[in-house]
Every structure is written in structure tokens, then in C-alpha cells.
Image 1 (cartoon, one colour):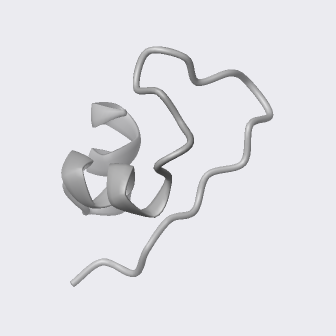
Image 2 (cartoon, rainbow, N blue to C red):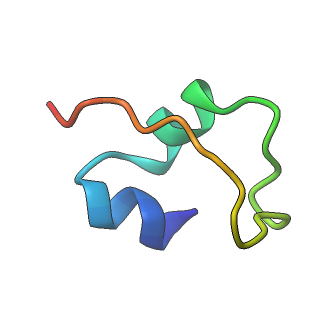
Length: 39
């Protein structure tokens, strides 16, 4: 999740809050994540 959060300029914690159903160690190709706006 770190690389995804970093790519969009948000924290990992923020990414996890917007995607509580996603486990950080089980992200699969094609899986859809909610990306909040960078602040």
C-alpha cells in the first residue's frame, strides 16, 4: 500500500481509511481502490 499511497501523495493510513475492506498484504491486479484527493 505504501507505493500506491506515495504515488498519489497520500498517507498509507488515509488509504486504509478509505479502503477498510482491503488488507495491505493482499492487493491483487485489477482490484479497485478508493483514492481520496491529496491534501
